[in-house]
Image 1 (tube, helix red, strand yellow):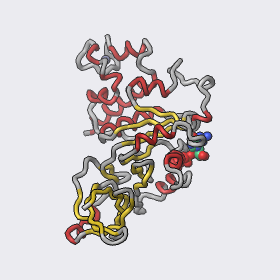
Image 2 (image 1 turned 45 degrees about the horizontal axis):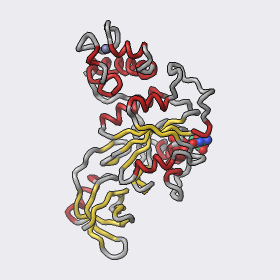
Image 3 (image 1 turned 120 degrees about the vertical axis):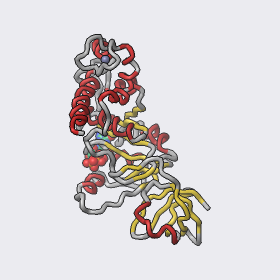
Length: 297
Ligand SMILES: Nc1nc2c(ncn2[C@@H]2O[C@H](COP(=O)(O)OP(=O)(O)OP(=O)(O)O)[C@@H](O)[C@H]2O)c(=O)[nH]1
Ligand SMILES: [Zn+2]
């Protein structure tokens, strides 16, 4: 018996990655009735037969599961944003960081188009001397700057993927397909392919597939496309802003939401430039959304 990861399955055919190769699998009798219970990313036990054929004999409980795309046991989310164009939408990045963290998936921020980026001419309002990379690194996130064109920085990202199941997320045109190709030369996804697939319409069944990439597995469909914040309470929002969380003990009020309250340590850190203006702005936007959502329940 060998352990592997399901790459994709449909119509009774299952493809499992184990021991550095892809096995054509069928289900053992007792599994057959619950076909739809399998998701890409499921850890399975297979019994090799002749050639590259095998049967699936068992499945491990899931650590987590995304619904769109439907993938189990996701370890990493690569949040892909261009440094240049489309202009990085940091509201979306901060939203994705919350969604990913709630799903207990490790976020890795990848800023692309480094070859087009000129630090001295780019001004990011509210950051003064910092680049966006500095802002997110200072908070403690793992951040890479890459060029999918020249390959600069790609090896560092590759090291993160080994033995992990990853999804790509980020706005259209940020370079997700290009990044996938740069990480995995020879297994090209067509640039633009990811989005045409997801635009096919929500009533068409779309089979997600995990692709072998840089020693790990990466989904061919981007995740986290919803803009809605998960169901969190107003007091919990700072849990998703690590740089706020470490300072909130210093606020005058225990219940401080860092909005209109006096003697707020978060606002003091904003004034002194220790907390970035865009992060604070997004916190306030999200706080309003969370409060409105609370009222609806
Ligand atoms: N110069 C440069 N261009 C890049 C880089 N990465 C992507 N591009 C270009 O940016 C455009 C969009 O790249 P894609 O990889 O299709 O972006 P995507 O995120 O997959 O976009 P959707 O499929 O719409 O979600 C293409 O023209 C790419 O060639 C980069 O690092 N440098
Ligand atoms: Zn406060």
